[in-house]
Length: 456
Image (tube, rainbow, N blue to C red; front, side, top):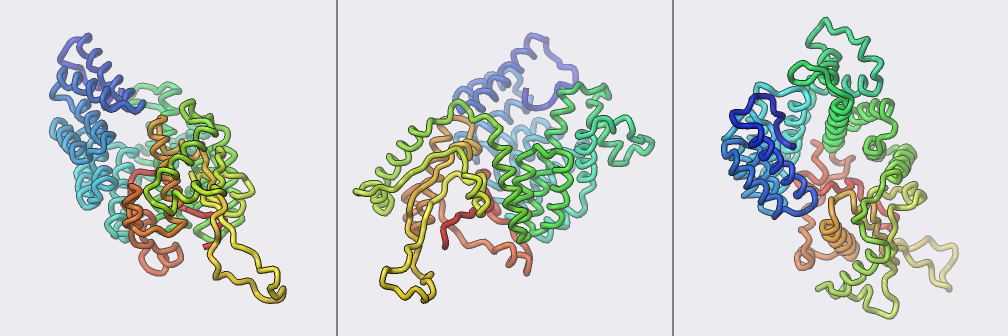
C-alpha cells in the first residue's frame, strides 16, 4: 500500500483496516494502469471508511493530477496536510504540482519549507525535500540559492555511504558504529533496521538502496543544471564504480562529459547507456513497428498545418523509420541515446558545374530526408498504450515543428506549448549565473541533450 507504514495501532477492527488498505491498493493499481476513474472510485471508498486519514486524500490528489486538474490536486494535498501535518508525501507532491503544473515555484518552495519543519524526517526524506526545493529555486531564477542549499547538505554523505555499503554488503560488518552521527553509522541503520529497530529483510534493503540511487541521480541532475559539472561527475564516477550496470548513471555521466566538452567520453558513456537500456524488456502494450508507422503517417495527414500534411500527401512521401532506439553509430556521432524522435536531414551537394576548388556553401538550409521514431525511448515516458499514443503524437509534432521553424501560433494549433525564450548554453551559463535547462517545465523527462546529426 502506498502511503504511510502502519506504525501505530489502529482504533478500528482488523477487517475494516484490511478493507481500507485494499481500497487504497486497488486505487493506486488502477491509477498505474491508466484508469483514473476507477482509481477515484476506490479512493472515495477508502475516504468513506476513514475520513480522517490522509492517505485517501493523497491518492485523490494523484488522480486529479492524472485527470489534468492540478488545482483540484493541490486542494486534496492541502487536505492531507491538514489531516496529518507530520505526513511528508503531500508536501512534496504539492510542491511538484506547483513547480511543474502550475508554474509557481515560489509556492512550491513554501511547501518545501513547511516539510522541513517535520521532526521525523530521515536523511532520505530530508534530501528529497531539498532537491525539490532546489528545483523550485532553479525555476525561480535563484541558482545561487540552489547552489548554497546543495553545498550545505549533510544527507549527501549518508546517501553515498548507503550506496557504497549496499554495493558491498560484506562491509556492513566492518562499520564502526561508536559515533551514532557518522555517515556510515546512519547508513548502516538505514540498510539494516526498520523504524521499530527490527532487522530489514533483503527485499526491504534492496528497496532502500534503490531509493538512495534515485536520490543520487537527482542530485547529479540538479548539479548539472546548475553548471556544477565537476561535482556531478565526481558523484557519477563513484556510482559507476559501485553500480556499473545502472543505465541512468551512464546516461547522466554522458551528459556530464558532454557539458564539459569531453565528446569521446560522452559518446562512449552514451553507447553504454544504449546497451544497458537494450537489456530491459519492452512492455507488451507498446504497439508494433508497423502500427507506429501507420499512426505517424495518419497523424501527419490529418495535421491542421499544411507544412506537415504535405510531407506525406505527395508523390514522394516522407520516409518514416520506426526502430526501438538509435543505432550505436548515430550515438557515437552525438545523438542522444534516449531521444524519442529525430528529424533526419542533409544538405545538397555542389552543383555539377560548380568549381571543385570552391568552398562549400553552408548557407543552404538542410533538407528533410526522413523521420526516425524510437519505440523504446517513447515508452520510457509513459505507463500504458493510451499515454504512448499521446507521447508519440507530441514527440512527432514537436520535432517536425521545430525543424520547419513553426512559430508559436502554429505550434498552438498543433496542441504544442510555445517555444519560449532560448536557454543559455552551458558555456554561456558558466560565464554568468548558471540557469536550469528546461527549468520549470513539465514532468516530461525528456533528454536534456537534444542532439541530432542534422546541421543547423
